[in-house]
Image 1: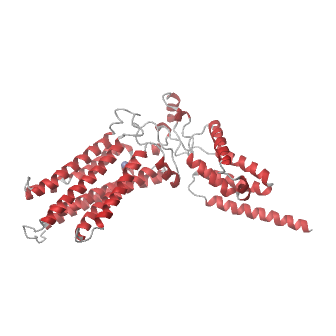
Image 2: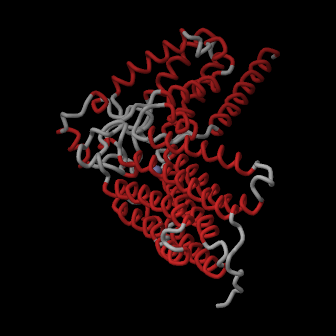
Length: 440
Ligand SMILES: [Zn+2]
């Protein structure tokens, strides 16, 4: 009688524990469908562990983890390779080792034998290096197994060939090898910053630029007001915000573009909005110091720039805008927005005199900045040099990296230019013409 009650109680606690584990597994986020199936199997692992002795449980868990890893699924219907792509793969014998393996992790067509051998190695290494504590596994199997599966999953993805990418990640077909597969976890995406692939250069160029501009902005804003007045700080602030937001969004986009279709789309929109903000922010100090004593044109130009900026942000939010085929349109929109600065520049030169000290100080740097942006945008649109040597600039030297570097260079040139203009205005701050009243 007593033992029967005990048995009932034991049964109950086992089912409670299973329910609890199931909850933990369901709560696991950051994994895609393949990860979810892993979580489900991990639950089974725990149930088994509770029912058997600890030695058997350890073996069971070991097998279960292997099974989980073997069970990983390929892409979903939306992401899968088209029959066409598979056909292409069969005939592409130029592809190297990575192509034979496809993109084994985390969600690519699988080679069962390869993955099995690879996973056995990883598991062995895990046990030997105490990554998996078998004793602890018996007590808290689900969490350990899940954590381990996640670690293996995040660490073991391989770069793949352009043709092995799902459609939504296929952007530049002149870059052949070294692409990241879809990594539907923010953690995995951020960890990929430290791996070598087609986006490494893009990520680091704008991450470093982002940090550098934060440094310059903090230095500028924290100067005592006897050195730099509050008004100057606000005007320069618009430029700093534009540059920091642009470089920050760009860094985020290149890091997270492989997360999922939705994240890729969202961050590409933010990336374009960042470019529009940088152009707007660059206009503000230039127009402010350029038309220092001419209130009316200053207000008109600033209003026009704001309208054009908002327009380009609206265009950037259009879903189709980020499609590879619209690359020239994107370059065109931002280039025309930037080049619209030619009008106030000519106006300004006529007003100040083409060869006055002030003109030379501001126009020289402005022209250099414009050239850097134009070269960058042209390389971006034409995809040079990888267009001429497909597959030769996969990791370093591709057009997008050059474009990124030119953007940073142009932003620093502009910072230098507006600093000179500001210095000139502060030194000779007396407006020779009275401040005009606003008349429309
Ligand atoms: Zn970029």
